Length: 361
Image (cartoon, rainbow, N blue to C red; front, side, top):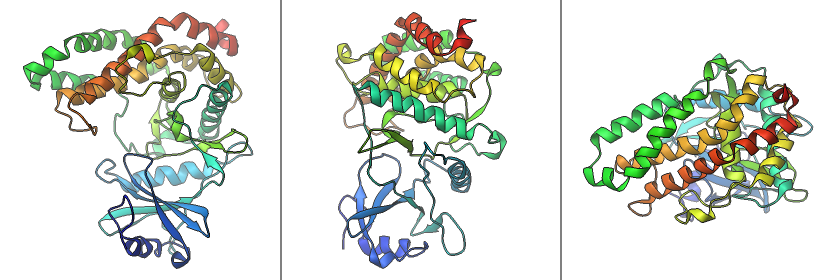
């Protein structure tokens, strides 16, 4: 029997589920459409969701063993009174993933009565997002970065993304260079400005590296943040990566490819709520890390925009597009938000200093 919105039949999925330590025959499987990388399914029993079942995209993530070691190590630590633990389900032999049917598969527990938000206008949601991002880092602060594999090497590395951009410029069609002339100029100028972030002074941490708002689970009943999901990019990084990526999706309600830039916002009230939530779980942060946060708010949307621009110049090889210039629209929207973050630097610094006394010295 074919499963809706899936490349697999129910029979095939039940065969794969049978490799894990559950009674596969007694469960119902449904395709989940959220997420662009992995194939994801919800496994339920008598309409009660119990597991998330995934085929990991081994084209995007070449080192599946390293990825799963990262995830299993982090999940063992990500457990506290105010952080809901997600658990991996093993096979009878103790493995947390298997290779079968031309893919790599894993099974993990589902958190009941949970939900996600793509955007928000509520300060309470922004506060909870800040609190849970802080708690995530607080719990992982003693993990050894050397023990974690780089699942996507140099994912947010400025020099690497700059080199890829320059290579795309050399090979792009002249028509695209003409159309994107202003965007290319903005990218070059901003790349120079962002060199002011002195990463050699920052502590290397285990980061989520994709802390957009819809990667945070909230309670349906209380709107309390429960935990972070989509953990495949857990690896080494700097705290301003996770800070800036969360901010870009919390203080702005416009989509990444929004063409009307007047709809792109930087809501300072939501920013302050997020920072206030973060300050509840922030004792691990150094003064140098706190000083990097204002530029981090510029850095993350810019890096995403630069990647979209690079892909546009490379004829859309990485990101899926539904029309020819969608990557250029993504780039322009993200650059517009990045520019608004530049314009709000004084307020960003003021708000951070009001919640982090170390910045007042």
